[in-house]
Image (tube, rainbow, N blue to C red; front, side, top):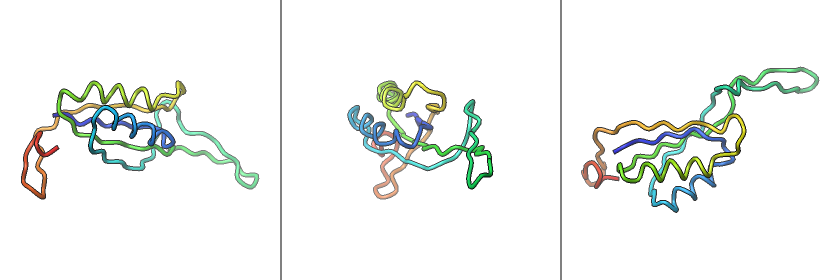
Amino acid sequence: MKCVTAIIKPFKLDDVREALAEVGVTGITVTEVKGFGRQKGHKETYRGAEYSIDFLPKVKLEIVLADDQVEKSIEAVMNAASTGKIGDGKIFVTNVEHVIRIRTGEENESAL
């Protein structure tokens, strides 16, 4: 099992969710986060004063999948989240050792 973590632009969330549903993903955890990479934030003006916004709003998706679903899920996220501009985000894939569904006690892939 793998955990696919994707950091994307907030306005792309619905597109990514729909793309993941089409490839059979049944559950996603979504968190609103802030951060920066190469984008390094930007400057804005408010009432004549210029100020820097160092951390940009992003959305973090966490999806735990069976190994055979990982590649098509990554492809779905990449296709749906891409704008071709800096700040589109990143995808991280990590191993998951053990999963337990609290309600039933099911473990590992049957708990997904």
